[in-house]
Length: 338
Image (spheres, rainbow, N blue to C red):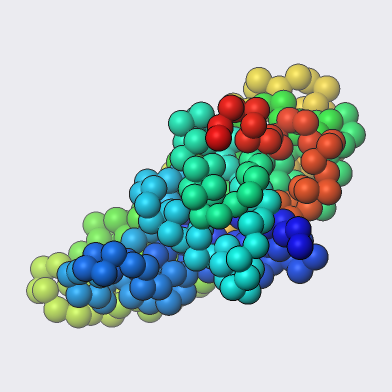
């Protein structure tokens, strides 16, 4: 039985699709490993709950950093486990399509491919994130019209202009969800002398962030440790606090959009003025992000439907379009990998 599996190998989440079944797994990119037994204890949500709560010989880690592999063995373990889960335990060697950032190097591509092959893949394909994101957002990229996508994930933000099934211009920066969380932690620490955790920062980002025009009226209570007293403390923060924390980071993404537009042929820029900019990835849900991009760039900007799942949906569709996607969808054999 032929089986096609699509893997959106994200820094924050791994989303896996199976041909004919759509998205089957959407879990955090975390693996817990027992160093004594040399065995994987848990992956995904179960491993995420173990972060900071394990004995010394069990490590719960994120094997992907800034969109690329930082721990090869752990990445192989997590891909193998998820492929096994997607197979429902059957030992079928699937064809696998992996999504990679547009700026990935050949060395990083090799690491991703070898991780998938060692995890049991029969054949591996690569697709670049901007192509997958646009397909998943339901955009027809086969026409010679300029379409712009900004995919803001957990580790990287990919900005690209696509026309006629290929990437015309693209840039990728390591400025995304994880950096936003770190900026919130840093700002609250400096302003209130309260140290909050990653999960609290992420919750604040999701609930009250507004990077365009905050009013100061949206509030929430956060809990952390007072760095002067060393004791637990609760404080109330507003969307103005989050704006102060995230404004520079959000503007860095906007600057990348401008740089891509500056090096794009004028005919395609004209297309983007009429068709608009598509925001995908978890960062697309950041309050006020679409309005900020539209205001600074001068082109309409909208958030795709279910932006977190766009790349995964595009990966799932990619096998049907493999003949058309000559650029951005590559058979591993083109690189001479074994």
